[in-house]
Image (cartoon, rainbow, N blue to C red):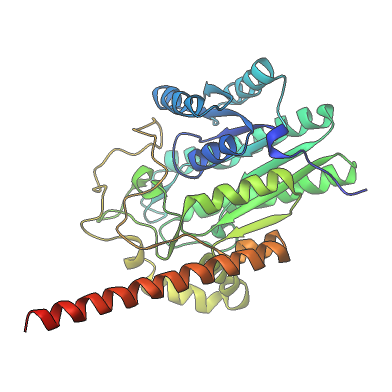
Amino acid sequence: MPLRLKPLDQQTIVITGATSGNGLATAEEAVRRGAAVVLAARNAEALERVREELTARGGRVAICSADVAVDEDVERIAATAIEAFGGFDSWVNDAAAATYGRMDEIPMADHRRIFDVNYFGVLKGSLLAGRHLRARGGGAIVNLGSVLSDRAMILQGPYSASKHAVQAATDALRMELERDDAPVSVTLIKPGSIDTPYPEHARNYMGAPPRLPPPLYDPALVADAILFACEHPRRQIYVGGAGYLISLMGRLAPRATDRVMEKIGVESQQKPGDPGEPTSRDNLYEPRSDGRVHGRQDVHVRKTSLLLEAQKGPAHLLLGAASWGARALSGMAEQADAARWRARRARRSR
């Protein structure tokens, strides 16, 4: 019998890393769709602000200041959900940490810290959620991987390695739950470059401010993928066709992909003048100012992903294509109007 998950408006969803980027975007959208949320992050002040904002919109919100690298903190997150809402139906492991720099220039303590957050934090949350959801009668575990779960990125070695490990752990846990016929869905989300404060929060060992290689996609797409996985069992979901192409290249032509990254990977991840100088404070060990969904790179951000819609199903793909077509036609009309306006202005000035 296929696994059935509750509609979002009947769910309580735990979200770690909930005060910025994809986690905050997911929290906002979950509340908009009627779910109760339990938000966890290290920054207690930012958590309070987010709770106030979401509660003012009619949201049912509980918060827990916690570091997912600490097992006892993860247990407190679950306890908060039980105390506030009687339990949870989906657990989203979104919290992450990152560095930019050569493998041999990053201190071993930083390598370990990234694994403590990105791997052991996800593992602890997944195992705890699995036990709770078995007893509750079903639910979803949604882990945030990356296209770098498939293909390592130069100058992001520790992060890539941790996301490889998250993919392996997620797959192993899924098989074990399925073998037991446990009513628990386990999904890995694999975003490409997303317009979040990720590079501003990363510890930087390069000689220029870090950035995400374009094209960038809107965090709303990641939130949509996460919440879709909370309602529909899926093995994995990619967000952004450009990132998927990198993953595909890495599988089909690994040495050629190495060469491409060696040639352009460094320059595409740094740009003088970007926000966040090399000496700026990161959030690797301590939280920094949070509360923003989007990053500060001055680049075009894609608002749609036909690949994401295709993975959700044929009907979603058709709707996504129609929406994209409508936006494209609207953009063409706006450009034509602008061209006519410029032509009229030029005639008047003669």
